[in-house]
Image 1: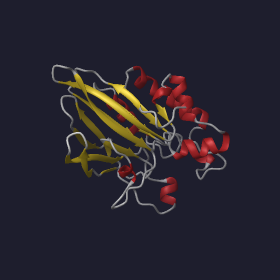
Image 2: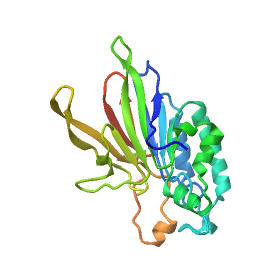
Image 3: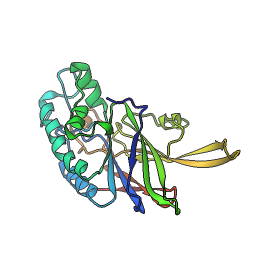
Length: 258
């Protein structure tokens, strides 16, 4: 497995005017609350031209005897959850849609702690995309389109990780320089909260303002089960994507429902 310090570098088509990057986490495939109808609509959306996806953890429920989740309420055992993901990721891999995959606590804390198992890494190996997998988190450098006659691509840097803090004055996203977009999951509370920063340009000796997009990806769970039993409130089913411009450095975020 590669270190999270090793960036995932992707070059998208030079003639693309834009690319839409979708973000998804907390599918919990294998849970009784997994919303397969929502997943199918999302899957169809990803097959559109210039559409790509980052998976940000907890793709699998992966309940074990030692976990908080109840092994008896899983609709699929862990082995079949892996088979399901291999089947559903294969078309995305074949079409070059998959940008990155990172572990969530359901894959890491449960599988690795009990059995030194990394199910998403196994899936990446089976699909030949182990270079797109990072266990802890991923830096992703995306080149897209071109600027001017020289044909230099526009570059966007993403930081993708499952768990993060989003405090009022300081959050996990503030711990990284050089990124254009930070995306996390875990809370099941989708959010689009851009951050402003002042940057000192050492080359040109000027200070300029920069916006860093900061998102919490949408989830794929219907309300019920553990959340309802413990008195949690229903969370939004909203999803987010980032539209990257291929002719200049610009990001437009989009919120939508499926």
